Image 1 (cartoon, rainbow, N blue to C red):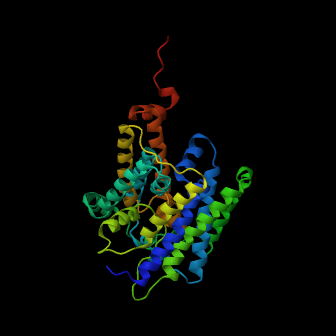
Image 2 (cartoon, rainbow, N blue to C red):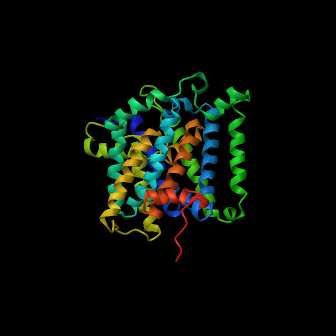
Image 3 (cartoon, rainbow, N blue to C red):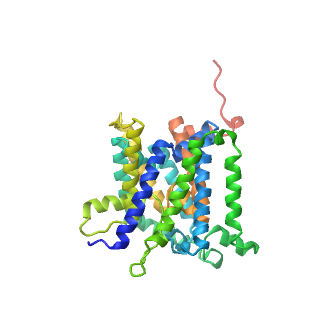
Length: 369
């Protein structure tokens, strides 16, 4: 199919930002699962502060773009879709567990591929296929039957953005809330002297936030075409993985997109970053059980990411930057799912997870020696 100016421009915007994100992962160690692991088990939230800094910068960038009339966030799929708390929570839990089993998220999978990890190529394939299954295949049918009827359809969530909902509930001006949220996030991030002493992480956090905002601005203003209107988008790495696979197989009958460009950009950026750090090398799974675990995890990520309308990037940064109400639900669910998945890996069984969650006073006593 012939590419239009709008599709080529969107592809270029996604590619440019993806390159920077790939470098951020390799050079700046920007990784969601690592941030969660450090916070939960090492009691070190330095990486998480980098992630929250990116959130704050992205929220500020989107807010400024909207107030200047450059973008209309209501044109984003995450805002135009019905608010469905159950689907968001269930999808987030599935994604979080899958992320723990795989050892990284969809974004991290592409980054690992850029570093020569062949096991991540298997995850990439399963993730992309399962995402398309959840979009228009068998698991999509289950979603339509079981979850879509539970979407919230009322005036309060007609525009499911946090500041709009709060303004309706409290009467506070909607334009006052985003700056207050940004200031609060900045204060929390910079309250840590340990984080302030890491200028590299501070810089990469700012850069990632700017890239996320640039996605919305790029597709909503820079390359918008009145004769070929499309929803505005930013970075997410679930459905675009499937789109990239589909394009490789059917390029003569499909078109390039922002998501395909971002996927390719992250891959190339991670490859360059791995070369710069002298970390590029061929790697693969050491045993069959690792491949099995990664296949299951990839399926959960692809399916859960579609149910939740985003991944750690799609909901945790892009949707957060729009202040979508679903973002907090999705991100909290992903955290919980990742925690449970990591406990499963450490304990080795579901019963072990249950024992670790039981209060110590109710656990069975160990037999005396």
